[in-house]
Image (cartoon, helix red, strand yellow):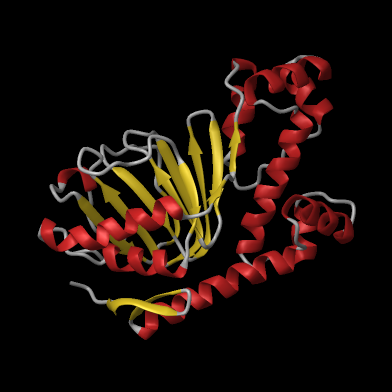
Length: 286
């Protein structure tokens, strides 16, 4: 059984298979803080996931997948997510990354994830060998991305860090943060730089970019995203977004939707296709 719902009792570590896959349509979900003995690949072709890690937060936009190393404490929150897929690997069997990695999901890699997520949990190891080898070849060849934002660990910022993952959170201006932690703006800037590698102003801008991608992934109009993030105008938001990503918001998200549609057509056609060539046989749940 690989397709699960909210009532399914699932524990990847209780299963002996070296590769365990699950598929679910979850909509809105909060996993709570947890960890696995197995390494995990997480992917959803639509919607957006956000994560909290130890001293970091990140988002997982559509067409991206994230590798979470074994025994990494994390919390996943999903909004408007469909066709959620997750693969768990026994890292004593496979050469898995030791660090968190975010990758671009190509049509071939998506087809492999879809197939592996549907495997029976007692599928013979020998029958998984070739597909799993191709998966790792594509994984390590995939383009890397970084949508991770470090958090300060100093106790003065504990309240601030607790609020970061709240849906309504918006980073306050520097002077407001300084007042809330009882320090000068210079001290806050120095402490943020020492603990995150960037000034608070740079951190705030990076947060706005990640939040913009999350909101746009929910199909929120550009004007509403601009207002939500407190930009002075839509044009100011569009200029900011283009400077950060190289594309205006609608063009950036349109490219994501095109990649999703291509990969969906590939999956529905029943073939593993890459670069216009059929590389393997029909996709099936076997």
